[in-house]
Structure formats: structure tokens, C-alpha cells
Image (tube, rainbow, N blue to C red):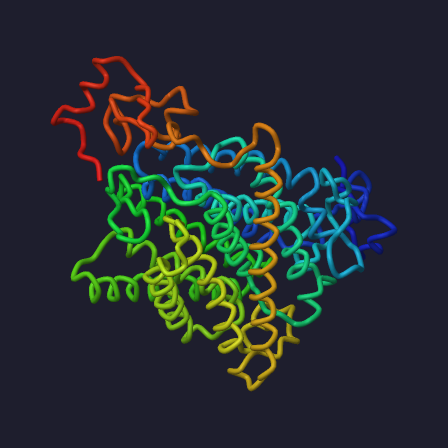
Length: 490
């Protein structure tokens, strides 16, 4: 019987051996703690389901005629964006380069990504951090995808998402998370992705909504006088999606320590308390303004709290986290409440909750960050904290990061959408007929007229030009949609 391989006692320089060691001659597991490996791997599995959970959340907020499109988009992001990450995405933001802007392709297709300590934390290997990181980009892409809301064509939207992750997400991720990125060098604090994830997707969604234009409302059925606004068809899906997002977010933030430590526990507690504060704050404001509660509002507040704590979870004392969630939720609520002033039809509140919520989170991180929290992982002891520790210049760094991420995402998104729209066959806006009948009927063979209804409008409708819109099914199916047993549309 073999006595086993000799353990790795010292990692060679990355340039000498990018893989760390030959697994046939040395035990590459020996330097790593099994608890660290297990925690990050399990957290990766929990984080993965955030992407389809966002799909369910968005599907519930859509009218029924386009809800399946969001479930499809979530699976597309999980698959196609995941393949893109494997091909070159991970390499672009975690390559061992020295420039401040972007990595190279040395880790493309995860070539030579194995046992070397990761750039995020030497406690875990590169391959484990790569496995964890894919869940971030797929979730970010899905947050953005909601901006196509009922009027964006499916194939151009998929092309845009892949271009956006390349030219927006990976640039910002390198700037903030690679040790050589210029924002990381500046001293910006972003624990789990306010800039690359929330600010980027929120301002990207604003750009996409702007470029698409407003949804059509030929029968004036909007619930808002100044913007198209239609109630989502299924608040139960909204609630279920939020539950799974909250559940996954505990791992999303908690495992961003890249090891298992007291800081991981602290981060999970911060995350949960911020979600609690955010949900209660939004609901109270909604009650004050409308005299009623709503499931969608409560869920929006919970997610706002999660967004606000994302950059702060591993940096702020636990007794400030509920306040961070509360303040972020209040800010996002009023951005959403007054969004009609900018006149952009962004009906899923991605800009208010993720875009501006991320900005509020960055600012609150600069205010409440304290150096002792960072040191709880037993590795990082050089964080000067924020205003809480009298480090007054930190707020400037946080504002610089927020403005940079917002501006880059918005303008690059507009540029990409403009170019894609000029490609023959890739115009980004659905035809009037397809929009009014619903994207699900246009794209999916499993769309069932009898089960899902005819969309916002009945059969026999006409476009604004007076042209009839074809029905998806037979005359008997049309009649079935108008029976009393069919759920009433908003």
C-alpha cells in the first residue's frame, strides 16, 4: 500500500509553475484547510441558484404574456455567460498581470488554473475561487436582463448581455478585485460587488431601458399617469424568488471572505440584518404613502437592504448593518417613487434598487467601515476603515468608485446597444405586434394560450396602425381565455 504523495510545503512562484505543483508527484491538498474548501464549495452551490431565482422574481413582476422570457433568460445567463466565463472571463479579471486596466488570456479556458493560491485569498486555491466567481457574473447578467421588459427582442438581448459582461463587468471586476486594478490600488472598499454587480447592472439597465423606449399602451391601461406601469401577474413568484435570493445572498456575501473564519460568520449576520432592515423600511414607507402593504414592495425592500450591505458586509460592525439596510431601502424607495421625473420606462426598478442602492451602499461603507472587522479573517489587517475609524478620505474613494462604475456601465451600455441595433437583423426593439401579443408567444413553443391567456389584451385586437394582430391559437382557445375561469388581467 502506498504511503501517499509528499505534501506541498511551499508554493513556487506563479511564473515558474502556474498550476502550483504536479498532482501526480505532490499532494496539492495538504496546504489547504478542508473547512475553507468545504465552505466555499457549498457556498458556490447556494449562490448558483440566485440566477434562476432572479428569473422567477422578474417573471412574477412581468405581465403573464412575457413571464416565460425571464425564466428563459435566467437559464441563458447561467449557461452562456458561464461558458463565456470559462473561455476568457475569469482570466480577464483574475490574471496575474501588472497593468491597472484589464487582465490577459493566460487563464483562458481555465488553463493552468489549479492549486496556486488565489489572488482573493491565499487560503483557497485558484480553481475554487474560479468556481465561486462564476456565480457572480451570471447573477449580474440576470439582474441586467430584466431591462428588456416586455419589448426587447430575445436574440439581440442575448448578444448584448454577452458583450456587456465582456466590456463592462470584467473591466470593473478587474479594477476593484484584482490586486493590480486601479480602484483596488486606490483603496476602494467593495466587499462583494457593489460596483461590478449592482451599480453596473443598475445603470446598464437604465441605459437599456432608455435605448428601447417606452412600452406601448394603446388602451391606456397603465396604473401611472406619466409612465407605463402594469402590475405583475404573480406576486407569489416574486415572493418565492426573493426567498431564494435572500438565502443565496447569505452565501454570496458570507463566502466572499474566501475562507472560513469569524469574519465569514460576521458577514452572514450583517447580510441578514440588512435585509431585515430594508424590508421593514420599504414596507413602512409604502404604508405611509398608499395606506397598504404589498408583497412586491416588501420584497423590493429586502433586496434593497441586501444590495446596500453587499460592499459593506465584511467591513462594518454588526451593530450598523440593520441601519445600512434601512437607509439604503429608504433611498431606493424614493428614487423609485420619483423615477417618473426622468421619463425612462424601467419597470422592474433595477436602477432604483441595484443602481442607486449600490451607490448608497458604497457611501455607507465609507462611513461605517472599521478596521477590526476586516481583521476577523485572520489574514487582512491593513484596512484603515472609514469615517467610523476617522479615515476621512475613504469617502472620497468610495464616491470615486461609485461614479466610475456608474458612468462606465451607462455609456458603454449605450454604445453597445447602438452598435447592435445597427447590425442587420439585430434591432433591439420588438415589433408592435409581438410586443402587444407578448414575447412568450413569439419565442416559445411551450407557450399555452389557454393556460397563459392572450396577454394584456384580448384576441381581435389591432395595432396603433389599425392592423389586426394574429391570435396564437384556435378560435376555441381564444374563447377559453375569455371564460370566467381565466384569471383576470391587470
